[in-house]
Image (cartoon, rainbow, N blue to C red; front, side, top):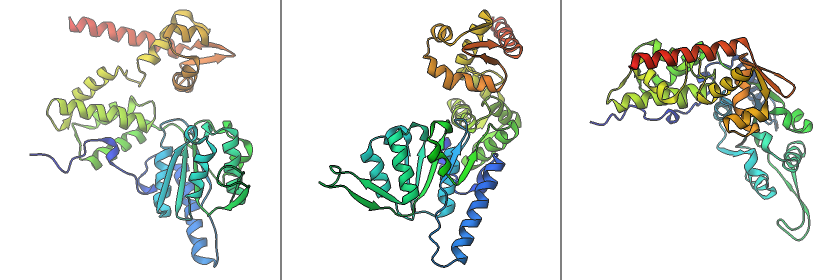
Length: 339
């Protein structure tokens, strides 16, 4: 018999209000403050044309910015959510289409807003400050004209806020900065999601393993770690995620006890051999573009103190060196046990 009450995918669950979000307490309190003020003003002042926001959500990738944006949309009760990405709306016609289709019951959410080019950022700033679009000749008519815009809600999400123009960034009235999560918060996030999906687990040790190997981000804890653990369990035709299932999942993922993957360890191994080296050398040795290394590999290693930078030189710390040695010893021990 098919189990109709059990979820099969992490993303089946939608967050519909802020109270469902675990962690980021300062962000949640800030947004709730502005929501309370917004609804009270609308209820108590006649002819109020108050618009919620605009909002900017900034912080590391995977820390829940999109989830919070959708929760804000749900809390506002807006009827239409227009989602886009900064890189995909750099054509003037695409941005115009979004703004012209937005009304007072619309939330416009632009993820990775730092990808907006300077012209798109200027158009967006004008739309916010003047509620108008200045349409040049040739786009919709033979002569230039002005189109009035409605009071839509704008939410920008970015991992690199200072790549936005100062004028646009400073136009944001609600500013929320996200940070990495504690292991305790991640445990509760995983617990909440397993309960919502109807997934069972052997003990809290399973949740701890998933949380500790998530680089302090919910996206990795849920989309990668928990989902893979569930798939391992299902591959064994069981419905209970065991500690052994979790260990098997992380062996497939090649994730170690603190969440570093094979790429992270390759990076640290190169530095361990050289003590210090340039980005160019690292890029060559691990066969990745320098920009990818800077944006994907290094931020977490820097934050956790595994490496430091001295101008263009990367240097491994004692903490990083100890992790490389400890991981190597465990791999050797595992090979001996297999024999």
